[in-house]
Length: 319
Image 1: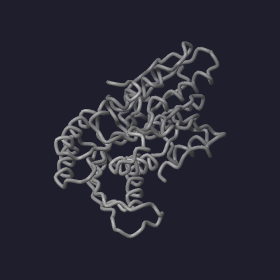
Image 2: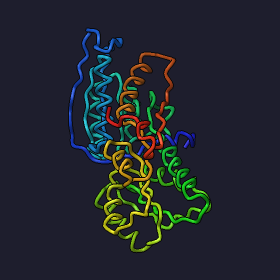
Image 3: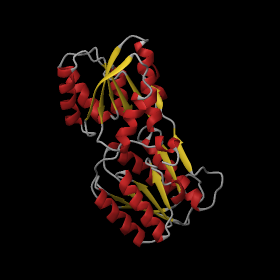
Image 4: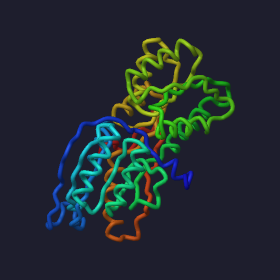
């Protein structure tokens, strides 16, 4: 990649929602928020219907309403082939901007090429890849930063004593790989990763993997999981085994995840807001299209490390 820092600006949560369409109107009347109205037409191709994606879309739609943007939304249901069809259908309408939450990096590259060929500016959410020169801009979450915060927690919490850590990864691919490397690369020498298997961002699969983990590595003290859905699967296995000594660390920030931190089921979590990311993406895309030089081409939201004592610091995940 052209810029390793950009590689780190990737968000996990690339998975499955059904095809959906919605339109957010654009009239010349002033918006309720008092924001200046835009006459732009924007197409948004969403990747999936996991909570992350629905909350991201909620933010995009809210910003479109505030700015008076005409918004068309379709969903790729986690299918790269469907994503390409959706991109082609949106481009055929010749919108002013295409916003893409991609299914995976390979599909992203194809979509960017198609948008460039059609002369439609493309703005990316969550996943940047190495498309810097070919896009209008991007708003991304900081995957390696999130993972690194939990690695730093592990280092501090273990206080230099030898400890064993297990990783339940997502689906093999760019997002999961960044979560895993962002965590494992920041661990101190006293922290030993004894297990690393994929849970495919699926609760039942993660529970099965965690059950195997507890059989093969009963001495494990920490389990790091890139998203909440898998973390709850790991929790079920840990609780069934009566292992309340194991500390579960996860990335997320939903209400259910924060409740699990408050109850002690999860020891620590990095939290960010899918809603705010979507809202900022639409807002920045419009500003960049309209020539606002005060807006950064690549923007991001910083995650917050949350434990029992600072849950109030977590941003609202879904607005």
